Image (cartoon, rainbow, N blue to C red; front, side, top):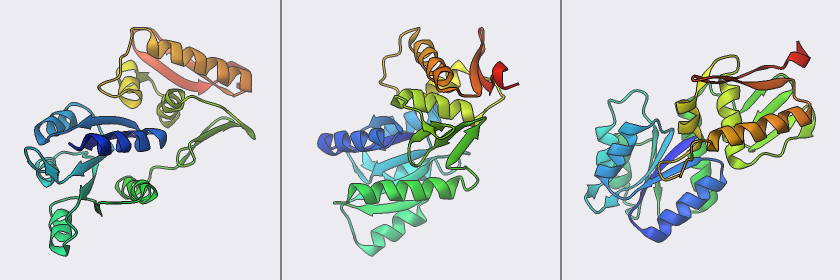
Length: 227
């Protein structure tokens, strides 16, 4: 999943970025309403975590401005204001959830999982292709009964491919699923990661393989050995 954090306090921003990145999300950051709206209109996000008190206004205005976008991300508002009227205002304004500072990291992650499931009720948390299984919530992969050790971006690539198994996934779609705006992507970075992922799948005895379609993208399909 891809998340946008809208927060102008540097220490809290760094904490949230680390927390969500360690939870397996691709994370982008902005510190103002204008920058957040530009980001949300430029890329598909699953979740946006927004502080209500921002330098250029109330973060709730971001939620309201994106209300007509379809699909739109799930919105979680953060605030130091715990008055019931503020919570009601946020939820009535289109937010999916509301969390008062200070908060426990585990509670934030739990709330994000809940609103993501609510927005995508048919999205399975366990994906399978051949003898390969991905547990999205547990952030683990296995081939048969043996665990498959993956780096974070390898796991994100594999998730995007398994979700679209048997279909072509363009290079642009993979880049959106794996990299944030601030990530430096050299011309062969994605290809190198896919090459490592292919090797790990082959060495683990996976009955799926990643094939390249020159100039188009990649596809996960049953390996020739499994046919």
